[in-house]
Length: 371
Image 1: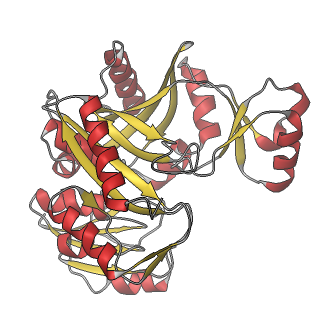
Image 2 (image 1 turned 90 degrees about the vertical axis):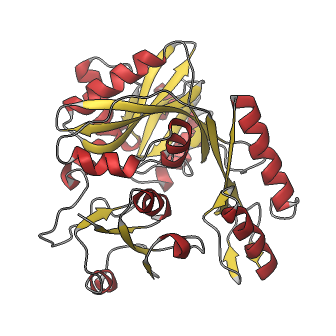
């Protein structure tokens, strides 16, 4: 296998890892950021974020050995006889359903926030605050903290296919794993960055990660993540999110796909996730290694609608060439309010140093006029 096609809403992180692993890489995606054209051998940008005839026509342009379905396309039904390096799409749909996951975790005795379908709850009977989330989907952008029954009554009238979840304060962290049909190996732990005011106004939006996550019970997280992923018979790169609170350790979500933490895990642990992902489909698992440094990524969101001119695009692209930025928008691009502008990277010997570097590069580069 020498050539892969990556199809997804955004594919840059997967393409970058595949390229470093020595593959020839083609990409079909929605964003088509400036740095992706430096990474992939060929890129097709789709106007629509869903699979349509243009997607199939674009796929026919390329000669490739295997297909990887990236974010937003993992459940798509591509009619191909070539290897598809993803979990089974029916399994992805099931595991990504937060209500199904809650029932599954309860059945196997794993601690998880109490979860209900929004349509089934009687708001006056709940203890507040509660979290309201889409039943499927990641990123936290649509998550809402609801303070009372009156608010929840209004939400019930406006939202479909959402869940209501017990609100628990704490730190969100994740375990990255490679799985191979009943076996799994943890390859990294990360702390999730959510709701930092210097990155976004959206309270619970996923805004990046710092790797590794060092916590006294991190080995318990790894063991639990490995057991659950094995039980579900997942394969390749997968992630498990946890909430660490005064009430204990809660399993939040299982991500049966490449995660946003991919690059910080690769940098901190000095490994290549894509090569491990491919090997897992042949039943091969990596050996666990220790982190060599701390690595962080921070996603800068637009405070208001932002017009990216040539100067700003070039500034971000210079950062990309210095390996401190990615997802670089082209000039003459309008970034809408609360949408991601660019991603910044930093590394250090401690968590505090890494986080400070991320904040400094964000402030220096945006200069206060983007956010």
